Image (cartoon, rainbow, N blue to C red; front, top):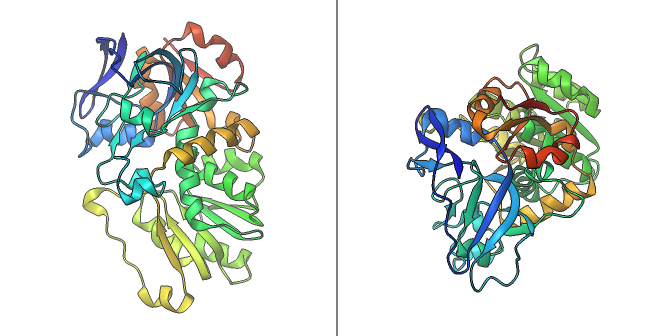
Length: 365
């Protein structure tokens, strides 16, 4: 099969590798589409402590089961599936409470196991048994289904935040994750949604979504604008999806009394310290959350939200690139040229799905 193999920092090589053999309890999935995550780009440029090349990256994939090992009973050849990439041990308190993504023994597709930037991907038995494999509803195409994994992470973040009817929610970062947070907050009943971004292009593009305010932190004091829009009270909920200390400090400063702020993005390992005014938190009774990744149950809920139309799929899917041109896809992510870029390993077979998304920019040669 053909795969894009991560060979080390700055090296992604499209080459022929052996098609995985399926053992007892395992599945072989023909990858129909795999979106490029910002984490894939960070690994490409800087490496990852848990990833040892050579490895096939890609954890936001959707495909069709083409082989099933012995003792697989709940899935069959021909099933259309997505897979929650984080695989817990199944026995610890985190796994037993439905928070497998926090398992200390977690293994991940695209990290320790080969991922979806390939024509086929093997799903290990432990993932099959743990419920990491979810069926794609008949009305959802493969390209749209790739959004389930990042949406699952957003659902996990907002599960902790408990957004209430009428809340004012400020989302910092107008990339794909920020838009997902804004859309989910609105669907949960947020009274007002403010979208905040440093530069204007993504803010301008998002105006079609009809949020209550679009604020550029580059062109003015974003905290002051949020205070003015809320009568000096601040936002009830602030979600920081931009990975910078300045964004996190800004998020804290615009949070109102008894408000909640979520650090959804991580920071570089050598620059992970954020200065916090403890008295500001104390006297305003502000709660700070950190959220990370998702569990299989979030993945199942995400694909149902996509089926129901509660997520604006066409807005988020902007490019489709062939597997052979994955490096061009990485360049698009780095330049913020689009939103979600989907890698398509079997291009000719994807024609019908691609046709369902006329907004897609095609990169196949």
